Length: 431
Image 1: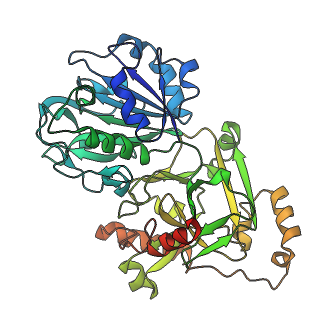
Image 2 (image 1 turned 180 degrees about the vertical axis):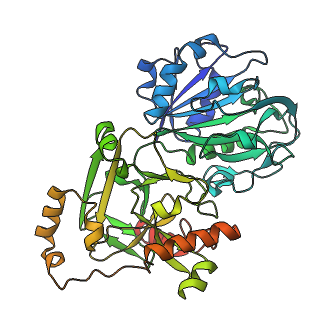
């Protein structure tokens, strides 16, 4: 459950019609009377509507620095805006955008929109969901002007005119939409129903990161990585579950990252690997490996599945070293053997006890590991990987071929979130 503040630019506080979409999606609604640092401090998300067709709220603008700082610190900012003109002035990290006010009634799903947005837990969104309303959207942002790492979600009939999108800012995210949601939540409209509004708002939240921790698939559902402990059962790609034998974390602050920039995280934005995966932005260390599943890999290695380090994936759109993150906490999860688990809906490795991988573990934690698992210190110890790990050169070539041929790194749904075998495992635990 997330804590979501709601606020209207024209009212100087939240309005009652904003509450339903928050509470109906299982979250806690908090009326924000002034969007300052004190009121933003406890929020996972700030949900803003701008009901004005002619300007932005003065109070919002005077607190924009506090809002920007909160987003950089991990808060999500969700804005539905009628005015649209000069929208770049209200968006943290959005100075590059070109916004055009041009109301119309045709909204389509953007190519490559994350599956968690189009077919999320709160409902389905398709090309006709928001059509034929009273000005379904009030304009658009041009595709070429989107901020770095942005993910288009909705468009006009022209795929280069973006009606809704999300992008990372520091440790948080911004979602911006030109849909006049205050109208559709505040009045009955036969073309855009309350259920469709709930789907839009709930699915939007499902693809935004509410905490610093990635969501890991367990037999009882998703769980934040920081809440996992030794003995917890985790779903694994080979089928069934494995229990955590050891877990530790490494926290790096602003000063540490400045001294050692090689420890800055790689951000894999929602959908960047293909097939809508990951479902939400995923932050990992540079050498952490993701499971690739493609025909390109099969042609190169004789198997469609291969583990590729995150830093090699940064050649792809939507995957980059995030220079804006001011602090990061890496979690190390160890099972009896190397495993492939689900993180934010996509397959990722557990801690690999090979000598190079262990260098990512701080000395104190490594000493604990060696005491608990003395075999990894043996001169003849050989760690066995759960999937093929190509050489660094081969990984680079694999990514280059995908990029050249415009092929998704995850081309099938076999590696997708909650496949049948995980669903069966969950059913066994829950009944």
